[in-house]
Length: 96
Image (tube, rainbow, N blue to C red; front, side, top):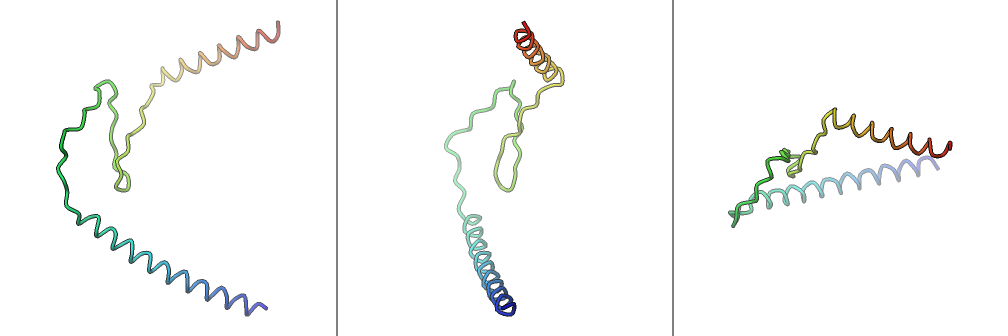
């Protein structure tokens, strides 16, 4: 029984390795086709981001993503204080 399981495992492993090789070959061909495609010039300029936003653009794995905006420590503290005040008000109403 164990020899059958081992033989099935080895057969499956070899099949998966072969499939992996085929997929890697196909992906390489797709990458080559995408990289060799002619670049077209944009017809109009992209709109500029507002100066107040100041959002940085970061390239990640070939994709362009916007960097998240950061809130200041004072802003976080104000939000936390407001939340504490809301909960205090709710708790006071429950006690009364």
